[in-house]
Picture 1: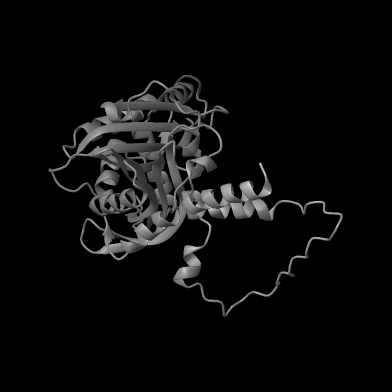
Picture 2: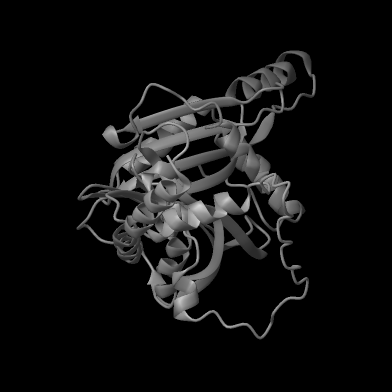
Amino acid sequence: MSPADALDTLRHWLAGASAAERAALADHIARQPPADRPDHTAPAAPPLSRDYPGDFTADAAYIARLPDLQNGPGSLIRGARDQIAHVGISGFRLPIRYRLRGGGETTLETGVTGTVSLAPDRKGINMSRIMRSFYRASERAFSFDVIEDVLADYLADHDSADARIALNTRFPMRVTALRSGLEGYQYYNVTLEVLADGAARRQVLHLDYVYSSTCPCSLELSEHARATRGQLATPHSQRSVARLSMVPVRGPGPLWFEDVVDLCRRAVPTETQVMVKREDEQAFAELNAANPIFVEDAVRLFAQALAGDRRIGDYRVLASHQESLHSHDAVALMTRGPSFAGPSVDPHLFQDLRMLR
């Protein structure tokens, strides 16, 4: 092919090429080394400015010419040509308002995870659209309904059918000490999650509850040593964490964060304390002795409480007793319904509960 024919072919391709394809070609050409031409020297590129152009304005015409590789053609895709299940952002933070059970609202710093599925023939997504969707709704007090509105917003932005949003925060509740009357704030790790699968939507509320677990076996052995040999012995207890995940049932009424905390306290009353004087520490020892608990007991008690609330459908209970006797943890998992069914266990599923320390 002669140079003239090659130039005509290039012009014909450019006439039908997209802006992204033309930008990719220009970038490729710019990265090529100068051709060896003994008859003359390639012109030197103009020097680049090292000063930030604070007075430069990007008008609409300039923005339209900017390369957009994420929305480029399928020819730019690298690697496997399969659908990506979730792609998006994690760790995006902003203050979000939440409604309270007793009325009013509270504003809490919240971490956002937002993802969509990506078809095999699409290069990527515009991740800033996920953040913009949240900022557009930031003046509203958040609930599952508001999250579903945001979900619909960025599903449309990305022309995707599958998506997930998760809002994670630390929800404060004022609690009173067992005997002294002192008060302090207990913080609960809470996540609101909405998943879209085609036209179907699923809401999930996750809450972590931290409690003390006294080993029933150790308690009995300690009492045996006291009774039979006059030997002072103490049972072992440990900080323990349960993560309750539940699918709210539409219709019976709202399921407040405070309701789930109350449910946990009724199931396992040995919640760790915030403010403690001597009389509170003694009371806590008595409370633990009255409620010794294996990890198997814990998941069953939490599950019984969840099953007894008509506002809750499918659920999952994880529990980790972070042993003071052993160098490993005692763990258990219990589920109801298809939402959390699955024989495989992520090796990090229980390890993540240790991050609460």
